[in-house]
Length: 266
Ligand code: IPD
Ligand code: CA
Ligand code: CA
Image (cartoon, rainbow, N blue to C red; front, side):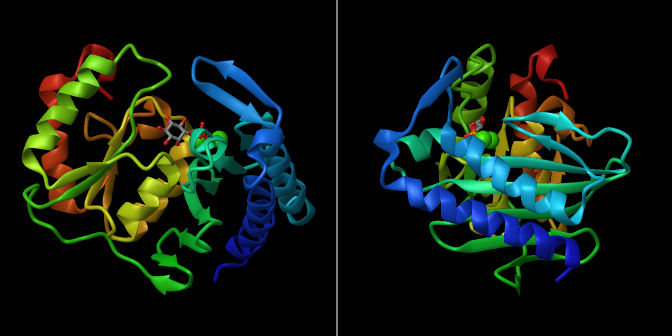
């Protein structure tokens, strides 16, 4: 394992332990609202602190972009992108599907990725050019050739609802063409599941970079394709993402085109 991923793994495990400790007592947590259907708890913040402190010990000069505390430390070629709890809505309901997502960019290129599911103790990791692993075992996307029989992951636009109709159009097309759709509730983990071949593809719109960064590198290193809604590389900027094996990705991209408004064209 790459030494950097080793450090990130330790940080994710500590944060994961913290998430599990509070999981049985979610009713005691202080919950703040950041916007419509957008909640943050003291656990999101504490998890983020644990991760940042551990990373800072080894890499004091690196920049950090984290969901709850924002961006710190310009001037470095290295930037960590952190979602300390992906799937907060699930977590708050005691629904056991959530993750921690940590990625490292060097000069703007994603180099390291980690998504950790503390409930199942599943650690998904990838280093650019070296493949993707689940608990140290190599993973690959599926080699499915068509949408027939495919299982796809997705996420609903439950906060920003401007594109709800466009999304529902895509949803309807995929319901008709595939074996099934799943909305597990943690985009980072959804992408990790594409990498592990548990779903054939995934799409969602309006995500943030910390939802996507680690999962995108996992999918690519597992032999898959990740793009924005135009088939381009700007998914971290647009927050619109499609991921899957080569063929499934291509078909999904084609399928969503009739539903895209100008705002969704990348
Ligand atoms: C959310 C989850 C969810 C996705 C949302 C994200 P959060 O992240 O990834 O699956 O549908 O768009 O914002 O808020 O739980 O970190
Ligand atoms: Ca998130
Ligand atoms: Ca989060």
